[in-house]
Amino acid sequence: MKWFDVNEIKDLNSLRSTYKKFLIKYHPDNNAEDTTADMQEINAEYALMFERLKNGFEHSEHYDRATDRQKQNYSWEKDKQIREMIIALSRLEGLIIEICGVWIYVRGNTKQHRQELRALGLTWNRQKECWIIHFDDYYRHGQQSMSMNYIREKYGSVFVKSAEKAMIE
Image 1 (cartoon, rainbow, N blue to C red):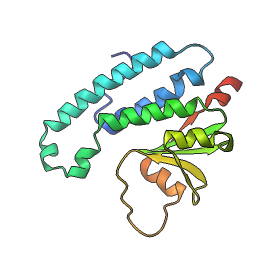
Image 2: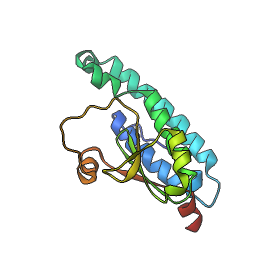
Image 3: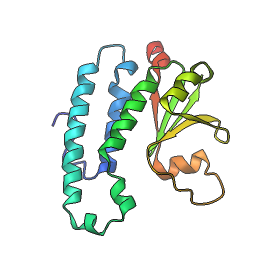
């Protein structure tokens, strides 16, 4: 494999993390030169690695003992939806796109894009003052809202540049 090191990637979390780094670095909207071919190679290798890891997990004894919620975490369809959403959002100018787990938070110059954001399925969150979308069942674990610092600490955080920032650099 050209992009993903088979020896370093042992689980889906490390695969997703590595993919997000490649997405930030090689996405065509984030580069002056055309990196479309690189992204297509990365996506193809990601699909292969995902299937390999998924099949290995599903045939392991850990899968038999896993709860339905844990089994649900390994969904190619969710990963595909997240990737498609990031690509759609990165085309809109002036946005700050943050990925935390299976949640996407959008800040920045959102007012001019609110119709497009709604059409993509995002909703406005007054408490966090940003647009949000998630690709998993939502389980609330208490009455209080989690702060963004807590969410970033627990699930990790990756920022993706939108179209306007990519053109300036």
